[in-house]
Image (tube, rainbow, N blue to C red; front, side, top):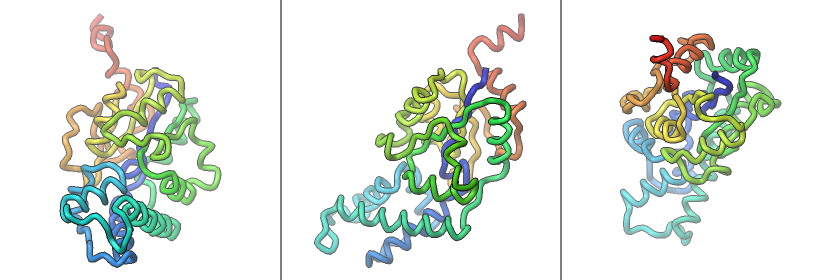
Length: 246
């Protein structure tokens, strides 16, 4: 029986990556760097989960000999760049630059009305989640979710399943009674490693990823309803085929 829906945030609840990319570039400019990530470059960098991790990977790949900028040590610089980027992203979201993807809000409302729990399992920063959902849902957005896992609770980024394992423990539910929603291969691998059936809604940044392990891949959540999800989830459970044939 399906008892909970667990949502990733960036790319899944909202197509945020273009806004994230712009925020990174704004941070680089504010810090006085000549770095600029275009769409193609950023698409590749999305293989690295986590904003700080993305900056550090780029730094080590393109500038392996650089250990300081403006007298700041590498980790301090990465942290400062990420702070500037987070502030730029929050400002953009507050100004209306990002909206929930089709079907997200309706599915959440339908699930809650049917008695299902909702949860968030992401490795983005808490401020990013709050900025998005505060504007999209309202100041009481946290009341919708029984559990929230993010970068502050799960420092080991996807594709590691840490955040999903935390959420399952918080919900006190087995993976077999939950359904995850993701948009990327890293997210899918994390959810699958936690034993979760996963529905994938790709974006233009992740459409080229390998989603063969997904329960289903659909353009967006406006293409499905709760009854369809229940059916797909039930059919994915061990023994479903044998019961159907009996």
